[in-house]
Figure 1 (cartoon, rainbow, N blue to C red):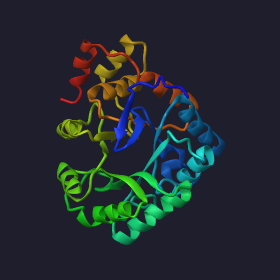
Figure 2 (spheres, helix red, strand yellow):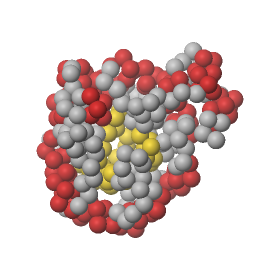
Figure 3 (cartoon, rainbow, N blue to C red):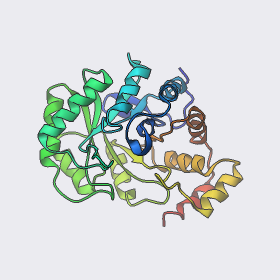
Figure 4 (tube, rainbow, N blue to C red):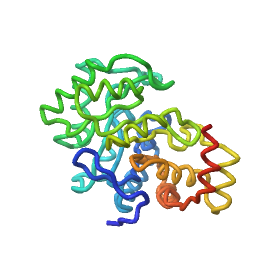
Length: 287
């Protein structure tokens, strides 16, 4: 297995994962609904990720729904012992493609079992409770929902827990119920509201996993980002990924793509050696 991925590794509980991982959201059809147009291509991307040395794949049974998890199983099952699949529960898909919440106990139990079935697993390595909505985190108690997942963990169906799209107060509330190994929130060079949370989690040995690390459906655009990229003869997206790995050692990357070539480009670009001047220029973007 290739061990030259940028960023080294991080430990989620007792699970060692590469800091450069892969997010499987884009393996479903358009707008994360239905099957992909090129299922063989989706399988090839997953197999290439593992061949590159990736040991952290992020998914959710709501992607598709179910199609992404089924493709992961087709491509990689039986899974290498070193590979760890992280999934999410707490939202489903509406008939028009929305993400309505599904955080009542019955829905969460069903979602955990759906993930187990589609992925072909007896236990899920990490399950994140998805909170908030499409606009971001929303205040409110997660006690009932997170306690349900903690119960499933005690039953041996889940190894470790995390939260996604959460406020700092919700992170603290989750920790009062059961240990967490990661927080998955929206974060990138231009969206840095979680800076204090990242530093707090780093001090506790808890991973922060930014979704939309490249800006989401609207890619990051900045004169400073372009300037740094030009100096390195790199793409702006490569610089954005490299910056995230430099931002804090507890940040894990899960950029998604449905292209083998783009996957390789991301893996190479994240290892870009940024200088002190580069970092100073890039830090102005979020201020």
